[in-house]
Image 1 (cartoon, rainbow, N blue to C red):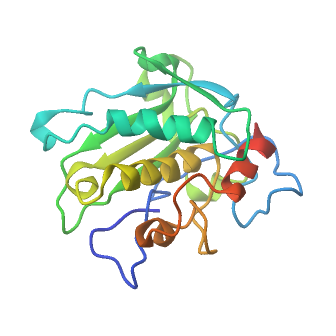
Image 2 (tube, rainbow, N blue to C red):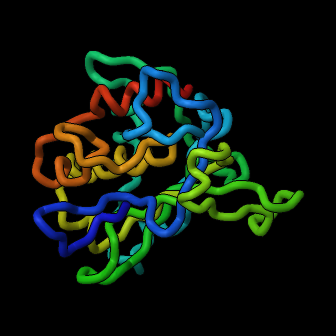
Length: 214
């Protein structure tokens, strides 16, 4: 889903299943409801590298550098208070090694989204970017994806303090791992709960997705 600057009934559409979608691999067990996660997942997603696109921290986009917030969000996912999961995330400077790419764009405060996540599958042999294609939402329950990208609107992210920026980032990262946007109360997967301040950390339902799938 997407975070909009102007939202109805305080419902910010965070992140992103925007026109693009993802795909997951191992079916969800009975422990995780299909209402909060898709049946497939990020292929071999337990121990993965993430990559900072050169657009992050680019002063031409508005001078907001969210790289520290991404690192903090990574820690919150790997070490959730009172919970545990098998996730390991480490940074790479080699794009081809990454399974989670972070990007940034300037955006227009009245129209652009805060965060948009996309999922990719291989569509042709080879190592070039043209060898991969965006997954459609209808494919989310049909096959695993190879990697995901998350793009943040610089102007929109500036509206939030560091803590809330990290929660938005976690929400988008959970989309890469297979979580859906939901409306259930008190969940990191619910954009409105992040906006209202109800959610302050990785929630147990989201953590259960990580445990179940990875």
